[in-house]
Length: 195
View: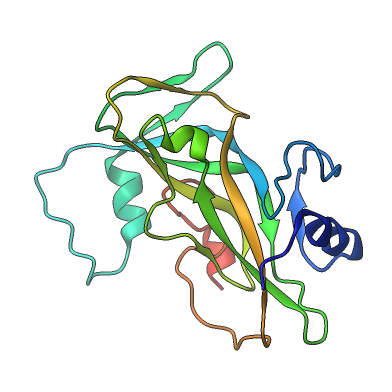
């Protein structure tokens, strides 16, 4: 079941999950749509660089590999990132979401989707991996690509995607997640969080 804007606010008020920092709680204004909440772009972008080595996902360590081959950039209002046609970057949401607070049989997860205003410019956000699993806590990594014909400016704090919250039928059993506790867009996890 997809939650409406009113349902999302009610669940936030009851502490059933959290979105922080939330840019307001008026369901008739940004960041809310009728059945989603918009999330903003954080200020760190990582750009995977070309590498002659083929990526083999059968081996563990995708986060360490991406960290090693990526250029890290901090964007500001005065220095946005110019996403050129065919460019691909990794970024994160400014907001951290927390779906670890199951209460009785109430449990939630979400999907991250692009915004239609960006899609009409040819910008793909968080493609092929939209699920934010029950139990997840942290910022959301976004895989952003420009399929359009024009350059597109990425500013920190811009509304970049939307979160569609859903109630999970039954609380799940804990399952492994290689990105749990991630601290940057490539998914690196501090050693302390791995334990």
